[in-house]
Image 1 (cartoon, rainbow, N blue to C red):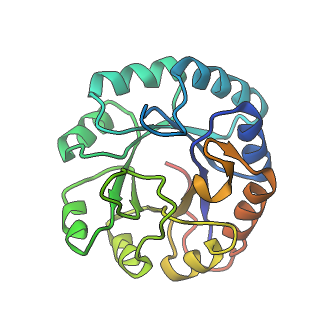
Image 2: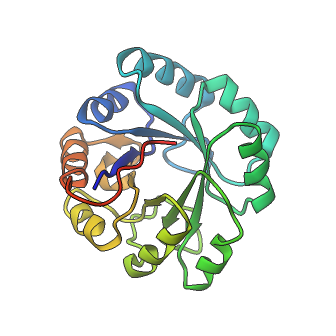
Length: 220
């Protein structure tokens, strides 16, 4: 199976280069000011321009939490984003509006329990993302989500698995869930906001080791 890899929480060009050169498909830039991985828009835009010159195929994703649609639109243009990730309480209508405007959307859901799966049915994003639930943080907790529950979410469409993934457990997670892709931030960090190059390389290698059978969907 083909597994797409998103390295999230990029705050430095060196980290973006390491991830892109190691085979990452997507880089995530957090525009949520409460996150230790927050990156100012102008800094993100400069990194995106630079990394695109070196690795034109990389997809750059802006991560937002309960931002207005107008702010999201402005950031897509300002930073040159390929996709947006809505990781808060955004409505199905919010997702639909952006999709209709030609902006691919990753919609994040925190898997607190099976009722979240019913909520997911109401949405039609480009890619569904499932993450661990924590009452005080929208993501980046380092906690592993329920893989059995995550596997059930595959029926809705392309599924990006997040939550507590590391170089040590990502292969097991891929076998258990068989997601379209995997997403990591804290699991490959040296400290909040900065990546450990060796862990990034090992994560990508481990995530992509399966190449037999399964789906091989291209990036949206």
